[in-house]
Structure formats: C-alpha cells, structure tokens
Image 1 (cartoon, one colour):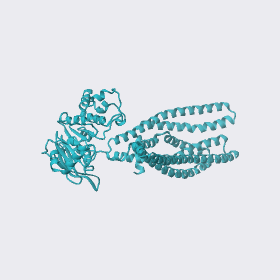
Image 2 (spheres, rainbow, N blue to C red):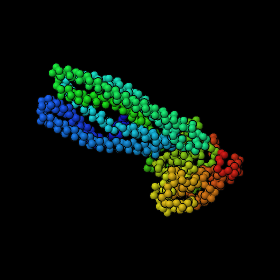
Image 3 (tube, one colour):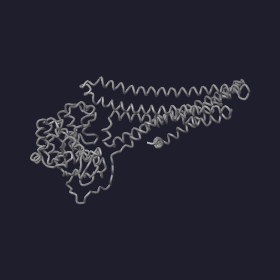
Image 4 (cartoon, rainbow, N blue to C red):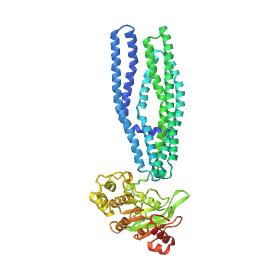
Length: 583
C-alpha cells in the first residue's frame, strides 16, 4: 500500500470531527499569538524597567506577562479537553471499524489467525494510529504558528544573527533523517516480532495439555525466552534511539545558544544590541528552532505510526462476505419445483486451485426431508455445509434455496433461515438460558420448552438462575454443551436445520432423544445431518455419499447396505466403535 494513500486515510479520521479540530486549532493560534508577546515583555522588563530603575514599568510588564501566561494555560486546558475527546473518538472509531470488519470477514481468515495474534495486532495498530491525535502532533501545529512570529521577531532584532540560527537547521535535518530510517526499521521488526510472539502465545495456551503430557514445558520455555528477548531487545534499541534523538536536539540547541551569547555579547559591547534584546532574541530563536525541530521530528513520529497504519488498512481491505440486498429475488427457472428446498447444480469448489474438494456436485433436498451426508475425511462434507451457509462460494455452479440462487439473498436474512448445531459449538460466558436465547428475544416459555425437549430440565433446575457456564462452556461437560447447542437451534425455529456431528458427545439416552425430535418437533423441518453414527442413518430418508474424486451417490440406508460393500463395512465398524471415523 502506497504511503500517500495511507496519509489520505489517516487524514480522513478527522473528517467527522471538524468542529473539535477547528476549536483546537483556534486555541492553538491564539495561544501562539500570546506566547509571541512574552519575549517582548521580558525585553521591556529588562530595558525599560530594571536597567532604568523604573519600578512602575517592572510592575506593569510583569503583570502583563502574568496575564498572558494565565490566559495561555486556560486555553491549553480548553484545547486539551477537546483534544482528549477527539483522541478517544478516533480510538473508538478505529476499534469499531476493525470489529465490524471482523464480523464480515470470510471465515477462512480465522483459520489462518489465532485470537491472541489478532488481538495483539489490532490493539498495537489502533494504539499507534491513535497517536495522530495526541498532544505531540497538535504541539507541532502550534509551534508552526509560533515559528512565523518567531522569524519576524528575529529579523526585527538582528538579521545577521537570524542567519546563524537558520544555518543550524540543515544539521538537524540530516540527523533526523538518519533517526527516521533507523526507527522505521526497528518498528517494523517490533511489529513482526510482536505478531510472531502473539501467535506463538495463543498456540501455547491452546496446547497446554499436550505440553504437559509430552514434557514440552522446558522446550517451550526456551522458545518463550527467545521470542521475548527479541522483543525486549528491539524495545531497548528504540528507547536508545529516542534518547539519542533527544540528546542530539538538546546539544544542537545548547550549541546555538552558546554561539548566540558569544556573538550577542560582542554586539552589546559595540552598542549594536541591548541586554534585553539578546534575551529576547534567544527566546525568539527558541520559537523558531523548536517548531522546525518538531516539524522535522514528525517523520520520526510517523515512523511508528505508518507501519501500523499500513497493516491496519490492509486488514480493513481484506475480502468480506458478499452482502447483496436485492429487493426482488428472481428464481433461476420459471418452472422450478416449489418443494426443492436446497439444491446443488454442478457445484465445484477448491481451496487450492489444483486440488478440488468437490467437483460437479449435484443433488436436491426436498422441503421437510431428512438427509444425511457421509463420507471419508477430506471428501468434502464440511465444505458442502460451508457452501450452504455461505461461508465460502462455489468456483463453478450455483446453489439454490427454494429455487433461488443463495447469493441473491441478503446475507443475514438468508442465514436466519438456517439453524446450525455443530460438533465444535461455541458457548458464551453467561447463563444457559442466555446462551440458548442469544439475544433473540424469545420468551422464557419457549426457552423452557426447548430445554425440556432436549433433556436439560433436570440439570438446569439444579443450578441457580445466574449460574455462568464459563468461557466456551468450560464448566460443563461435552454432552451438556452439545445439548445447549441443540436447544439454541430449536428456539430459532428455522425451516432448515443442519446437524454437523451434533450427537457425537451425547450419551445413548440423549441420542435417542435427538432421534425422537426428528420425528416430532423437527418433523416439518428440512434436516441435513453430517454423522458417522449408524443409528442416525436409519432415521433419515436419503443419504448423500461423498467420495473424493467421484460423483456423489444418493440412496437410502437400506440401498447402501445392499449395494455398497464399503458402506456395510463402515456401518459394521462403527457399531463396534461409534466414536471413531474410518472413512
């Protein structure tokens, strides 16, 4: 991404806060004007007051200086109030954009990035970008106004000494350019090493049981030390670079003051300059050198902001799910069969271009039909479900819902027609009823009915109403988590149910309960089941058998038992060990 594009997008952060920016700039301009008067009051105190023994002049001009300082500080407080609000709003906006983008990113993004890495990346980038609204940047803007008045003051006092002041600026420019290049490189290393550590840390937490069981703790501690030393070492280098940049600036300013005192003293001895004039000149020189040094240091500040801004905006540009919202949904065929609920029409899909997962897949599922999708690992079962739920899109062919291309539906409206129960269900750290309701607003009676139908009544009655189940249901068993997921789907009352290994963690009694639901509460629903349990297959009306590199075979459980030796073997093996998938 070009830096010019990034700068435009950074500038856009202020577009919705023009009122605050205007007030801040107005305060800065007024403050700069008042600060320009302070050296003049110092000169008058010295020349017209102290040197002439005029007490009235001393009182007058010191009082004027006091009023100017008080007014300036009040303006500073006012400016900071608006600046702090601006900074908070920009930070909120950056986080909000990142969060909303996450809710629409393609699901494949989350398979490549773990939670710790993602949180670290967004937090670091938002924190760095938010610095565009910190006090340092607006200080530079204020100093820019001061610089103009400072130059005018310098030339009014002595143009020859002004030239000397300006000669110091190229030296500072060369020094800053060196520090900027070094800082950009170090910040890049910091971002890379922090992202690497966050990814490693997320995996370390996720695999804690394996680390303990396989004796990996010492090895992982060495990896931790190596990654942390890299981060700490880079932070140390950045801190030292900051120190050298500040030191070089202080040395240059002190060298300039020394030269000005020497030359100014010579002018005073020759009666070409007053004592108050030399003090005023040095004050005005600070009004010139400090702003110019600060302006030159903007590049040094941006060396930290820019890498994060580039990564943040590249993240925001990541491909999102399509969310078409067509007011009229046209069927693909005028003579479509109204009973066809879901249909695949010559659908092909691949994650890698040369490795198709499914190729030319065709099948139809009627409204209210109970269908099982089976196949070996890698045959495309999960891919078929992801295609139906629009977590990915076909490379070729189309999928229809009630005869209409599913890509024509608005995304949220389409998914509201599907109730999903997956093996890897995610539960939130709240109550069981809140996890079932999920903010849908369904009544307590509906929730209670679903709890009863799924066989959770006795368990829920043993708990307090405010019992929290822990992160991802950590305080529950696998079967209890699966039942909550099933109850969650039941309250949705969607026309299409997808059960992806939904009975894998249930005991025999609970599994029978689910089978009964297929014939009762779900009798009028279209149900797609992905399972390896033979008992479930006896209840479905149709089985879609997926085999890698072959067309899908469609038939009943009885048909496959009669005509497919591999299917018979698979059923037999799962009767002996239902929790192991052979295909």
